[in-house]
Image (cartoon, rainbow, N blue to C red; front, side, top):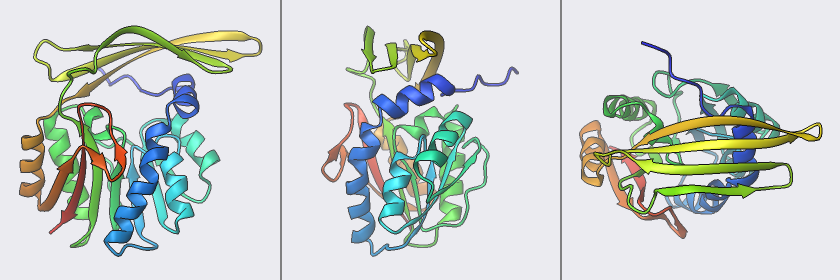
Length: 240
């Protein structure tokens, strides 16, 4: 079987950090409030799929100790630059060990990038094993692809541009995003392409799996005041 093609290579990682970090920035205050409401101060936090470190930086500034994990070396390089108070490592969430901690965070549809439902189940089990009783697992996932497809559309910044289209599979369980990026370097634009396939899971199925794995979970459309993209579900799960 061929190895999976790496995602978030250098140019897309840069563009994502520059132009698409809004969710992490918006979610940070809400997540900090959730931690405080559970009496967690100075918590040990593992951020799975940490990206460029935007959320990690905010959590460190709030006094938490953060370890970020991401499969993209380019994202981890950005995270080390922008959130030097946290620790980071490159690893795939399909198999990496999760350090013992008080909280695991995976915000930004991270869990939907896992390659199968079985991989999701195994990840949830590893999160459970890393947490103490009362520990928190905060994440989001896609439950519906409705209103998430679109024809090619563009967006750009001072030294970058991206054209993206999104399509839904016939069974409506996989959302495919095809991206062409342009990044200005030394006066010329470099072009690259990436295709991301993310999986869609029914809310009831996710809730049932969390309960089976040993979590008590609340599933909503938002993390506090931070409302997610249409079709996404916010999860606050506490280890029993």
